[in-house]
Image (cartoon, rainbow, N blue to C red):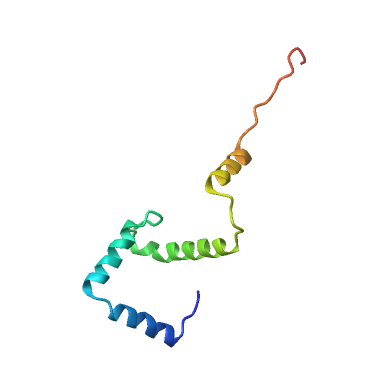
Length: 93
């Protein structure tokens, strides 16, 4: 986990304390309309597990080389996992 110093904490506090109520509401609403994000309600006992999973996901994202696109990854995974049909030699037993 990345550590933050007092100056960074002060900057975050200043940002949120300086927001108007309308700006805060707009920021909250924008978070729910981002198509790349999802909001879920989970049992509290799963929170540490989900946090660990997200941290692992983020660390893998940083280490992974740029991909050539989701479609190509799906195709490669399908090809790796597909079972090749067995061919029979006609007439040979």
